[in-house]
Length: 312
Image (cartoon, rainbow, N blue to C red; front, side, top):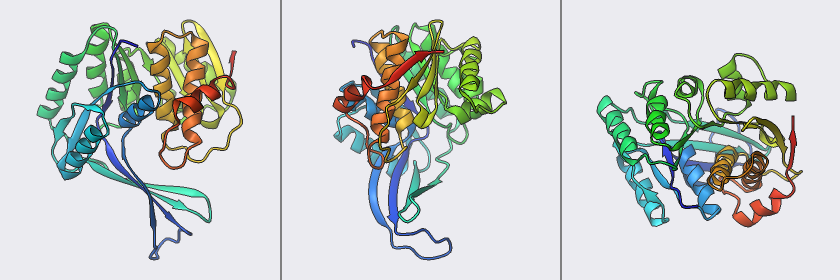
């Protein structure tokens, strides 16, 4: 794979996961730290790509002492980083695991506010880096202060230079971003339902949704369905990909790993069926890990032959 993959995380986070024997609101808990990870959807995608032995470049915004520490740790871990500086502290997200109930509770900070000058500098960076054939993954929520059309403004120069932009966001950022005609979008069922204005309850609903979203401008639509796999619209085909029965330990990062699988497949010029299978295998491998760990390439390749792909 000679092309470059760039992941863009505009609102990264330090993810800290704690476990408590039982979560009782209004009381003091003695928690045990399970994991501390550098997070944000684009960073998660790059971590999943590296587990597949695929390099990527990371950009976006980092701010404050927490941001400095994150950038330093990413460099130490061997990632190619070129983040822009934001005012304020990069956010911290807390996950509490209730052992008694087997439930996760998430508490997410909003993140630092970005100003027009910082947004202009980011757009200029993307325009300078954009090159024909490269793959770009624009991932996650917009930071406070960013306009709803920010992803659209970043997608256009990538597509205009012959690159391919993958957009994985939600709400207005996804709705407006789709108007810039990215190469691919990867919503989950909830995000697609919000975008289309109706609930997706059946297989037929999901198939209708990917056809409609593809008609709105994306050449590839991958609609994630969690443990049910995904529905893919690509090159005139609509396919349903279903994972094998596995023991899922944590859903955290599975959707981001699926996006890494899509990037891997498109970089290798795979068929629609192989593209769907790789996305599902990557997501499943990550769902099988504890906390925010990602599945490695050996596990992904083992799962690939067990994914069921069928036309619909």
